[in-house]
Image (cartoon, rainbow, N blue to C red; front, side, top):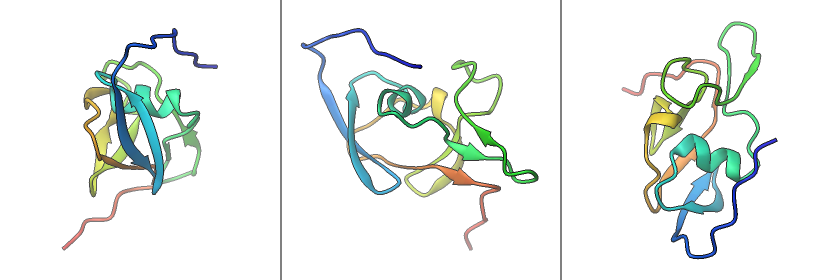
Length: 98
């Protein structure tokens, strides 16, 4: 489905996806990094549980919502990947932490 063009000179950025170590290229959005690591769905809808994946990659559709460093409902396509980020896929709605 998604394939990256080869770029051997690209800087690698370490992060985790659902607790598993992963790497992506510097400058990637979180959504692009998920796709580059073979993650096909980043959330399930709250009502039906339907799987959702990055779609528009420009912040319009809200299908790429993920939890980043403990903060839920972040648009993965609008957040640049940073070293050590903890990215988690979402199952349904995000719970409010008190």
